[in-house]
Length: 160
Image (cartoon, rainbow, N blue to C red; front, side, top):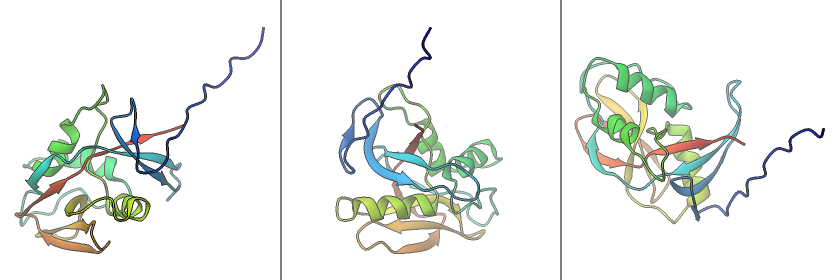
């Protein structure tokens, strides 16, 4: 009896729709802090939402792990509209979307430079009053008041 072969998945070209994965292929997120690398799938723009809980420290402190930040925000006491919108997003049967961390947004900007625009929330808190966002026009990473409504672009991970 032969061992089962690992199924081969064809990774699309960066910036193209990844059929069956719920969005655009946004490139490979390199391994960091002991975690394996993964492919990023960028979901559709969901609209403008507040980050939430202005004036409160949140449990979303990772600059690299948006999935952990989003889970922490969704399970925390308080209202975090941007994280909740990303977490509740479902596309092509996938319900594992989250609000990306700053490093994930920067990787997306590097890979899709010129194909996106707008100020997009990250899941990474800067302070009790501010959270990080990425300007997809010029690649600047800013912090801004959590009370402001900014764009939400959820992502999901594809592990091969």
